[in-house]
Length: 81
Image (cartoon, rainbow, N blue to C red):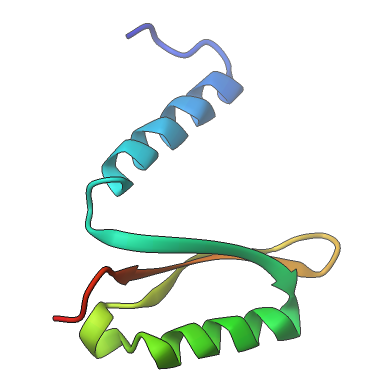
């Protein structure tokens, strides 16, 4: 594979590499973009429904956007241990 020539090419290559590994790691991921209060409620409901002890659930990634909305990804195992 050719070396990336621009920061954009490098970012795309890194994104694709992460996506390939995530596809086979056994986790189910759901992504959301919501206002802050709605995001908290969604995350809390998810974690209550899929407790960490059984599903290894967690908020995997989050970031606040300039418009005040929160973009986040939650993951869990497909089945409880």
